[in-house]
Length: 322
Image (cartoon, rainbow, N blue to C red; front, side):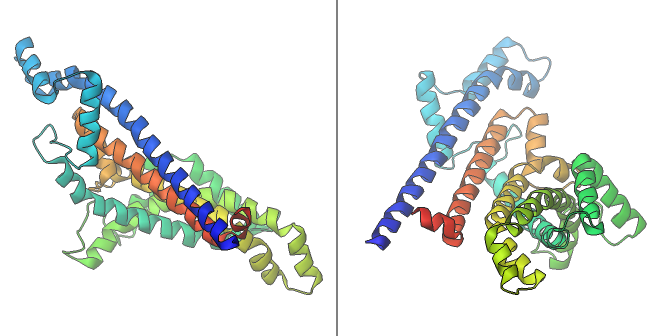
């Protein structure tokens, strides 16, 4: 009976999360559709030459618009997105193919940046749990400085250090793994390190606070009373109960790397989805920009859906709620 109730609870959670994703896509798609509808004039004046008259702009609008009422056009727009028929860019390239060519680069950058951020932040957080010491002040100084600097400035510092002074990493560009795996890793390192420093600073501030709160809880003090050493208390009484916070921060970092790395990708001339968004904005490509926004919303919603199931499977408090 308990197992059956737990199964029903999981199914309800799944249904709620899927409904929230659907609602997110509908709201974002509606906003994107309205912006595209009202951006046609600007796109026409940008794409067409200055000598083109009003009739040419009208022909352009008729070519990119659909017949019918606004609701019918919105439904057609949503159906086209869900079926993968995303149209062409202003330069005539297939949007689906363009995004597919760049998605792998962005995903590899996101995975590596999150991995580096965890490798940096978790040991630093564990070492600097005790307040007042040198490690605590050093970790606080690092997180404050990194979070205070603009992301492009961090990228420039890394380029100067690793490319111009040390000469060990390329300052920009991207090598596909099918061409050279070592070259692919080398071109990923600088943009991934730039993003990982930002994510690591965020994780240190929040995860270390969770560690400190849990190490003062009664079950941690009970471990002390039972004769456990400080490292054992730290790992069993603070680290394990703080893992849900860490998982949430990892999900937030990953979704940010996928959906919001435009500045970093532009600085490093990295051919990902972020730099593609900048290119679409500069060329006033409303269709490409809208497709990228909707894909970003879908990626973020899906990431947090996966996070919720990970928390449910790993956090005993979530299972007790069932």
